[in-house]
Image 1 (cartoon, rainbow, N blue to C red):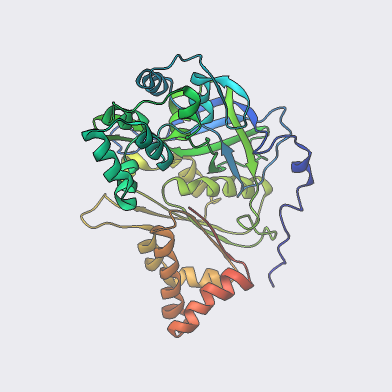
Image 2: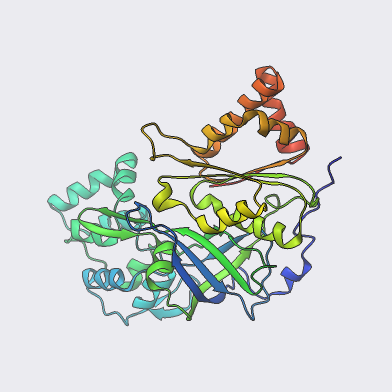
Length: 398
């Protein structure tokens, strides 16, 4: 019989003892940084280790870490030059506190992606002429405006419409969007790494309009957060649902392609450290085994040692036809169904739009074929029984 799952937020009173939160983040020190993908990979995936010493912050596997990024100095300097203002000009940060233009653009506002307000404000300030006509056509069409700003930052826009001028630094900054934290699934167990938190991060890099660009938080962590420097504002975001079962004898099935492996590395570290007797089954997928097998040595070692009882891999580009984690689920349908009927918990972490939907439909298909259920009964088993009633189907998707 399944044990009743308690609320992890109530089980961790120590977490409330820390003075640090989203509104008051702890400035963490980066103490470890390595690349997980190999040369030749189309992805740049990194492993980061942050120190939480002195913060009072605690976490459990399944929680997330909120991290605030900073804009790249070169991007900020180029933007300030285009605006034509002095870098030390006085402005206010997102909380209304006085700061300099340079520091506000570095730390307080998003400048690597454009918003609609700046476009509208620029349209009000550009003189009559061809540029103004083009800008008004863009801002007057919501769909066209969305398409335009999707691939541009403010440097792109100010180069496109170089006749537009903001009258003051404050007039420009007042239109910007404040920096928001990026939530990363924690990739470590506090039992194994006390005082630390580990992250598995895809560094976002792309080229548009002749310029190289990168993600705000991931680019900051990879390129600008100095090793052994306290420079990363963070806080812990507890999860109410995505956590390990209370019963250490329960089996767990984990499906996490790409950086979706992060919480499952934490799960495995935690369960192994606790001496859990339940079995562990991991489905992991990426593009190529040779370059994209994240945490390969650790996962294979756990598998050899019997701590990871089953490891099913899906490297989508290593054969003529693409193979994803949902294909591996189908291949193991009979065994997967047996585990679920024996009380196993099923976890999914990763892309909500494609992978998670495909995995969900695969579960329903397995319930139909292996359980002999009608389409309606199979959907109810997955959507109601597993997901809501028994709470053995847990998702961390984004």
